[in-house]
Length: 93
Image 1 (cartoon, helix red, strand yellow):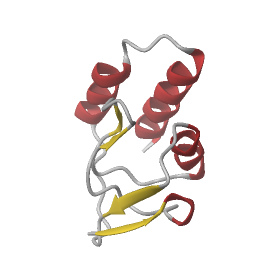
Image 2 (cartoon, one colour; image 1 turned 180 degrees about the vertical axis):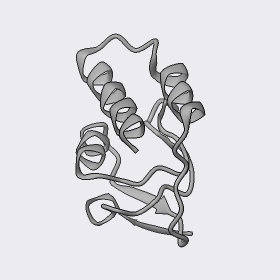
Image 3 (cartoon, one colour; image 1 turned 30 degrees about the horizontal axis):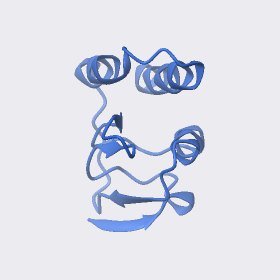
């Protein structure tokens, strides 16, 4: 694992869950970072990220359920959009 600036992490895999300043989980462990995810995380104040050194990915229905469980209670338009982006990403893989 290594810590890298978020703006250089496209295509990398998250080594741990990513949380905002309030401890809300924004992204689970094992996600491959896309440009859209990086933009959404940047908008939430994330500047660096711990990434996996191996190239593997967690993509399954449990991950989508985790996203909805962690983020389903947020009602702000930005958080709803962020959650939808995450779910769409996982459902397309």
